[in-house]
Length: 257
Length: 281
Image (tube, rainbow over all chains, first blue to last red; front, side, top):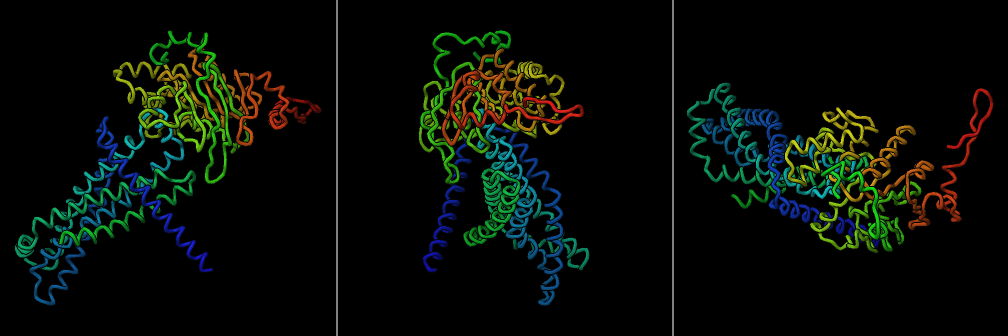
């Protein structure tokens, strides 16, 4: 009984360590192919359009409502201490440091990450990836590297859009709806937000871009050859990306603070 | 000689002569492969003659596609050698393997066309990736290939808009466009009706005779393949049980091979309105 349990735990540990190793090799291989010619500019632009432009709507929507709810919550909390004037500061710091990078990354995971896994997984199942290999075109370079590069490039941009829309959402609720002074909102924000908050947020967004594209392409690339396998791969990609984003967020925040 | 450079000039390439024709272009020596702990290939020895059509038959799930994927380096054997023109591709780096792969093309079971590209873009893909031809030259070659496989005017369609037979034709055009020395066909007629299957077989034979490439085909289509193959090999229980020209192959004394090919050729009694008649399948 004890032996069986220990053996089971050992097998799982080995499986997890093996998977982590394969994921790391996949990432290193992607980076290696990214810096080797031919450079696939058109592929990268297509992916920027797919991951970035097509995610704009959901980023703006979630950014606006996140800012608005922060404005609402922040106002009633700060009023207890007579500090409504600091609403701009509370909203901006929350969004720029944490909510902007994290929520935009989670949105991109749901919208573009799952699609990446499904696309690459279908290409694997229908032997399109093998077809690339037979034509002496490296799939890592043609398919994976442009997605990872595009994600790294667009995530800080999407995060900055989320930040701006979120801060404006908080302004709408705080100033236009609840009566906080416009000058107080802006000046409190200006006095408390530092440059390191902004680039810290961008650094987070950039690293989340790596996590999303890495996990989602890996899961698609290594999907099993069935519809069920593809479904599982897509679910795993979204769950693992989201969890890794939150875990990595903690570590990077502890370094940046 | 590259097919894509001059179609007319290469039509004579079918006549492979002299010692070159006698040497096998692909040799598998003691190839063993297990998938998911299950042995699939158990020491395959096989020689593919240059410039001929060789068909590998065998039971479903018997490892025929696995065998084909070893020939182009999509799978590496657990043991044994895969020699292409004398080079053991199992020991090559990714870069060197890609160089060897330039001799190959492969027509996959489902054609494996890129579904985000049109037929024209699919056929042009290897030319755009691997040559420095100008756009007009690429277009010219692609249209020529589409005409050769009977897909004139279909270039603007996406794979999802094509029938199964058309997709196979487009896949064949993409396989032919770079002028490969060797084309691997993975069950090229699976899922097609008998008439369409015959059309695809005829097309493969016609293009092979015209361009002279070495064809290796995996198929279940018995007795159809006896009419189009120069050699037939049977993969049975993980090894090549028999390989011979079709006439000789059909006279084999190997019990497992006889059983397999006789299932495909056994006369079957079918009832008709006027009575009963006997047909070969």
